[in-house]
Amino acid sequence: MGAMLETVKVFFYNDEWFYVEMESRPVLRMNHWGANGRFSCQAEINEEQQIFYFYSYFPVNVPAEKRTEMAEFITRANYGMRVGNFEMDFVDGEVRFKTSVDVENDELTRALISNHVYTNVWTMDRYLPGLFAMVYSDKTPLEAIEMIEE
Image 1 (cartoon, rainbow, N blue to C red):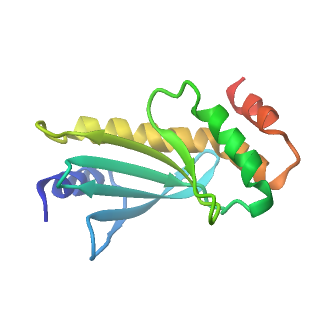
Image 2: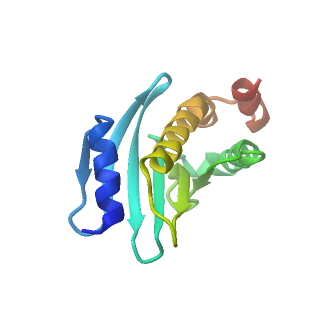
């Protein structure tokens, strides 16, 4: 096990997050309950490149007929976002929010992990109502963003 993964595991243990460690790769999986809903998360380490990734997953795969509108919603959400970004897989409709930090020639600290993890889950939770609106309502991407950002 690499030093970065151990640091991440200690962080989640100390912050009382229950996680499951993948056996095949340096990945921890967990759930988060926010004010607007529950979603799964994943912490991933690339020891070779010295990068820490944290993902929050929208709990619904976007139906094919809604993916173009969701892409517009995500583009609008990402514009001006200072830390992280939304991504969507056009093949299966998976939507996630990603934060990452490259610590090459430095070290991954508790503060860096905390900043990326908590910014990530706060952002996903904030945008959940808009993401759900894009799947389950007739709101336009602009209406859904205005619902969140105003």
